[in-house]
Amino acid sequence: MSGMTEPRCPQCAGRRIAEIDRIPGCARVASVAEDGTIDWDGETLIDWNGQEPAHEPPLFTCLDCHHEAGLADFAPPVLFVAALKRVDAVLERLPLGDFEIGTAEQIRGHLTAAKESIALARRIFGGADIA
Image (cartoon, rainbow, N blue to C red):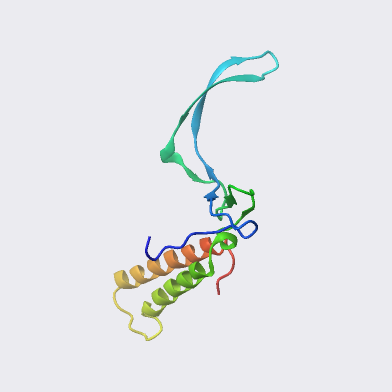
């Protein structure tokens, strides 16, 4: 895992961190009472391809102490530095600063890369303003 860092819980220092996701599934029903109460059979078919974050920005939890927060709470500072360096690197390549306009396709490519990098930084910072 070179270049990777393991998140830790800020409350208990646990390393078992998970993103809170929504996963669609079909749960088998055994019976339905007259009042509408459902008795589940226990079998659920999960659609793993439909898995997505349950919150925007994503919310994470410590599986040991159940602390919930944005990734910024769990991520070591090295992730913030990496995200900012990536944004800086993309912004430096934008042709607008030195007036090298380039083709429309080149400009579109630079702007797309900048948007992706800024979105990554915002995700890491939990939606906080990164400016």
